[in-house]
Image (cartoon, rainbow, N blue to C red; front, top):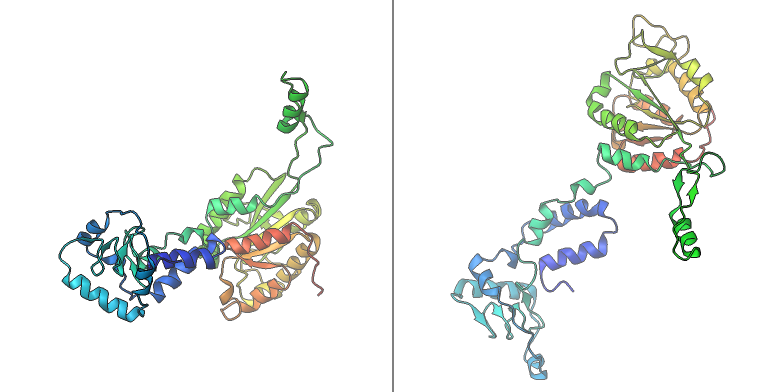
Length: 372
């Protein structure tokens, strides 16, 4: 099925083994690593490719031809091919020895040899190893960090449409219009319907400054995508530094003169808001667990940060935490204690495409609050 070609084998394996384009890049990396030192016929000199560019009609295979050919192992075939290439000085067509077209030579195309190596005829521009090494599908991966468009595509799945009971009829019902026009023997009659709107309301809380500076570009992409997502019924954005305390700020500068009381947010915004908290959850244990743990000489928190997080989780059952740090580091890096503690309160996912997909699923259904 691979046509005795490594390039054919590459495409055959990819077609059989890879079930989603998100894994193409991983397949390319594995293929290139395994076959990196293989010299393939696709690397033949340009002169030989010119000879092989001639396409011949298929030959008629006889019983005698079948009897006269024996299967050779791959090492023997490679040795014979090296000898032919070293000796061959001109093009050959219809023969039984040289690299060419037609005939019964084991090397070439458009001929017959049950154990031969197809060279030319199809896919000759790049070897399979070179194709895999180009990694043309890096952007299809879902385990990498996100871009603005990828954020937008994921956020579109966060929707819950209203019914068509209320509101003005402002949306053209194309199917009903076609049916009604047919009933009228071709006389056009437009049918209007009440539009269904997304009833989802979103509350976005983003960690800013400190260790999050490393991920500022990624967080800016998320912020841009959320603001471009005009399909939400309501969208509110607040900021915090390291942990949420008594204050939620209106900008990433986290100015003490520009904030909203967290208590006000809990009293004002209904539990059906979908809450997305973005932060690395990595901090000193006292910042999360102690009264006065906030790192700001001008402020003092009467309640530990963990109490505020638990209150938020209890009030907003549709809530998730997105962490820009790879999950591989959560258990052993500095800050692993606070990461683990916060992950016991909120469903925590990586800030990748896969992680965001899982977070969206959490936000579409009420998640039970963990005891404690």
